Image (cartoon, rainbow, N blue to C red; front, top):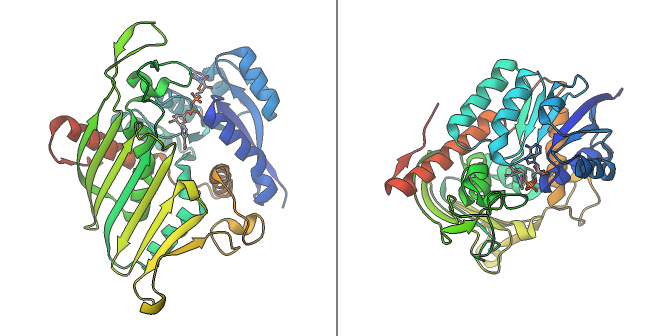
Length: 381
Ligand SMILES: NC(=O)c1ccc[n+]([C@@H]2O[C@H](COP(=O)([O-])OP(=O)(O)OC[C@H]3O[C@@H](n4cnc5c(N)ncnc54)[C@H](O)[C@@H]3O)[C@@H](O)[C@H]2O)c1
């Protein structure tokens, strides 16, 4: 098949800038798509640092102003890897310039912003996707397949947690490189938009829409020095959040996230209990899917730990041989592979901006409920 080039312009070279660059570089060695990504330009504000990043990862050129990157005729797709408060302006400008857009999660600071972004990409007719990458961990994709085949039967419960422990010190400042997540003006919210957004996206994908929620949040450290001003300022993010949810399919859910769970670095787990079977998944052991099937003969019935590495399991036929696992970074490779496969079809790749807006609406309802102390309906279109 004759290959076509898809020129990528990446904005932001931090954690996600690296994860995505790695995915763009690897994807065509493992997935045979008509389009091959070309690392055309990397953009960030510091000219020297972005040049060093571009040299390390093989970008052909650099920019220090994202508007310039978007104006360039030789860029086909814009990849947004910057803090949340910049997503909207960049995405709308990129849509207006007719660029395809790959945007990091959460889509936006809130649902109102997200709606504007959806309208911009839909009006411009540009292909889009949002990097909720956990959907493309093979074990999670397998969970989706098992649920869609009806193997669990009616679903009663969904249970998700995302636990970390990196903000317990009161000496940690808010704002600036690496710490923008503690600054509400840059992040929008704390664990709700950062960590629970992942749990909510996976949950909606696996179990359908959410009707209503009731939540509590806490900010354990009320004031922190702001990196930009050097002043001690009120902290506006939620350090921890727990919420109950009712899904449209009648199932009940609990979600919990915190950055104050000493001993946990990135413990994302979910469990789903159905009429016939249950599923468990754990990011720390991401290539395994735990499965319990009540229909098994009682003398051998029990939890199985399925090692998701065989060639007939989602995405695994593209990698090594059965028994050899892949990791975190491959979920990004899979998302790029799916995006590239959809380009010739003229289709956006799930989760699209519109799909990700649904997660934003749940986040808004969660934060609203934590304030009102009441159950809140998830707003609709
Ligand atoms: N999908 C995931 O699992 C996942 C994981 C981490 C982060 N994220 C998301 O990715 C985004 C970036 O997070 P990160 O962890 O990579 O952050 P980071 O702090 O590591 O990197 C942010 C980058 O943005 C750049 N930047 C900031 N302002 C800019 C501007 N005005 N113009 C150009 N560049 C600018 C910084 O220089 C830095 O390179 C966030 O939206 C975050 O929520 C997603």
